[in-house]
Image (cartoon, rainbow, N blue to C red; front, side, top):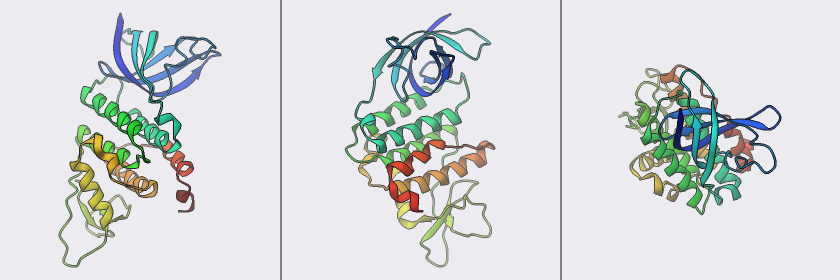
Length: 254
């Protein structure tokens, strides 16, 4: 049958000489894989549509029990042109798109997640400064929707400490190196803790107002990835974080 939906392009790969397969997150059907015939040909009407992370209106032939659907038409709704002019902005957008790609099963729609993803991309596109904090805020929202929202409560300790880790069990913040709690192993500073608590309480649209370096953001994301891998029981290789090394040279010297 012919189906249509708003969609966000998460990933693309070549197919044959001129076509491509795109993984999209649709508002109506969740994550789907579609084949756009001739999309890589010069002059193709679909060539501009299937670029990560475009927001598109997609019409396709949806056949039960098939893993790949054929595209009938795809029109760009938002191209996020400002986002594409900055490597920092693009690196953050790609990481957000990849996190959805890695955590969502096919054909499981979640309109709230679709709205959160679109909101994050618009926030990145509008941000006049590197929007690394948006990636962290989005991951907090994603964890909440997946049912694994970290509590981010600081465990009471006898002696003050300035270093924490995220508990794998419930996302509490415990003194780094705690002998009695399984943790992500990533070291978080008191400033990191305060940033996480602020981002948790802020609307996603205003997350970019919190200044966060690429290095600190990657450290926080790695902590969340380890936490999520524990609960999903499979690896989440967020390969797009490699781009942050290019976007932010200081990371290369870590």
